[in-house]
Length: 356
Ligand SMILES: [Zn+2]
Ligand SMILES: [Zn+2]
Image (tube, rainbow, N blue to C red; front, top):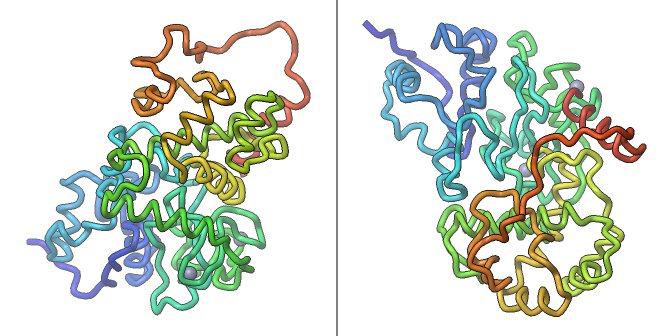
């Protein structure tokens, strides 16, 4: 016979599944890892991204204990929301627009972003699903940038590693700093606006100026982000002119210190890329077509390695399909000469981000 949980914290409508599990564990006086090991003995829950989705069998065990139907967790998993963002939600790959944890054992490279003021004003502090999304860089309610690291020890926050002895999900798992006391800085209006537009798209699938469905819309926006990212600091005159038509000074923009995928970049780098790409994305298809033709921008300026290059962009270049010799092999090319200092420094920054 199932012994139901008589009392447990209720999940908030915008709460991440993992955040709720952690709160339940602390309420029951145990570590999150002990709770999940007792729920699912052969499942190492914290070594995967359980916020994407867990399988129906594991979920049913939990639902039986709390005597709820599966709609109870309707908003708590990323997959429910991201079906409108991407048609490629593979379990073994990172998802576009979702900040990956970069999990190694129970350790995470990126942790979770948070708003210290939300945590301060919550009756029972909890972590929002939105804080896992890469277009989220600020809290619209408190008009401050989100925080991604503990300001005392510089480690990303990983609430599942907060032991019950520390009692609260808002203290740093490593040094015990009260994250509610983190210093904040004012957010930018443009970044807040971008969040709102992306939210409208994901929730209502409402299209603005590109006449495409939500999946294509997010794909286009993401492609403009990689366009800016790969050409930051570029000195080619036609590209400088093209970007200047959107008031983007590409020459002054710094290349990412790590070169990691957009979703894994530090918040400050994501903020700049989002607001710059938005300057292109917020204008129209016709505008892009004219500017590309005027500045003689080739299709290879875009990242063509992505599968399913948006049809709309092919039309901008008057093409039906991508040119044959479009893709440089991803295979490693072994060179005899050593890497330049710049390349080595970038590799080092990447490694540091991954192991910090
Ligand atoms: Zn807030
Ligand atoms: Zn800390």
